[in-house]
Image (cartoon, rainbow, N blue to C red):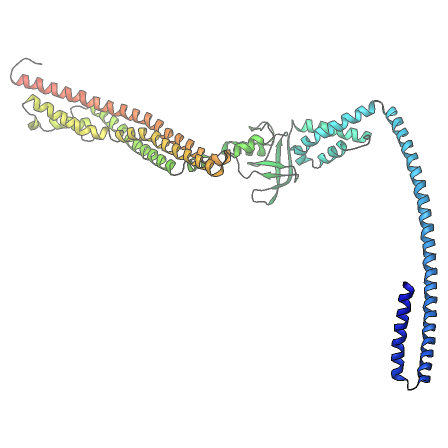
Length: 460
């Protein structure tokens, strides 16, 4: 089949050549000559191509022989290395057995050492002492992950670092280092460390950032009492100083500084809280004004009691006495009229003496009711957050519960003090009114006696 195809192609190629040469040949002899010349040229070309092919075949065979020899050498080397590896494995197993036999108690010691280093690594990493002696945790971590027996210097260093941690936890140390302020800037200052419990710089408390290996100022500082104690410790050179220590090594302090202050608590009460505070402030202002007024009135009434014969207009008792003693012509003959006049004079003074007490009683009653309104609103907000989120996440409910509780506290917070203040004002005003009643009754009795003497009758 292939020969037929080649024969057909040859005939086709010959036909094409005949056609091509016939186009340039004038006679059959010329055509024959041109054909013979073309065949000779083609035969020469085929010989060159065949020579090149044979040369290329020889080169490929040489390369193949070279690659085969390399492969044979590599395979032989691989077989040798495999045998050597197996022999090494046997030797290594034998040596490991001998090593374990010679280790004896050292193997157990190595295990204990790794365990102690691993347990101490986290403690040292988070310890405030590492802020003064940095990068100690790297040694513990390396020793805990080691696969070989530690050396004697490593044993000694482990014992030294553990002993230093124990010693430093009972010392008050001071050193100069860089800290990170609340604004994110670095500041070189003196740092005072009380054991491994708390650190401070001046009146500022510090937090140890183990990942950065440095101290940073707490973004929110505690109250003035704790800050003054920190300043006292920072400025102390010797002797004793009053200080606060966090036994949880910073956890309690971080929670303590997050506690809201009075202003923040009031803000959680929102509008209802502001109304309650406004009522309380008005009540306190009124009670303070009235308490000062009653204090002055009681002093003046006490002074008037010592001078009953000389009525003075600057106090209620003096004005009641002056109603009848200031002008003798105003003394009526009828006892009932005299009694009514005295009662009128006393009643004129009572409103000023008992001023604001009704409002204070109203504030005492309204405070818990306003707090109840805030509580209901807070519960509504809480239930809305649960409905919208579909879960009872405490963080989502915190706002509503906070408003409910703060409103209740504020309501009771104004009601209870105003209740006691109102009771005190009522006692003070009642004492003044009692004096007015006593003196007015005495004035009436004196008038009746004087009238009986004028008519010559028996004295009452």
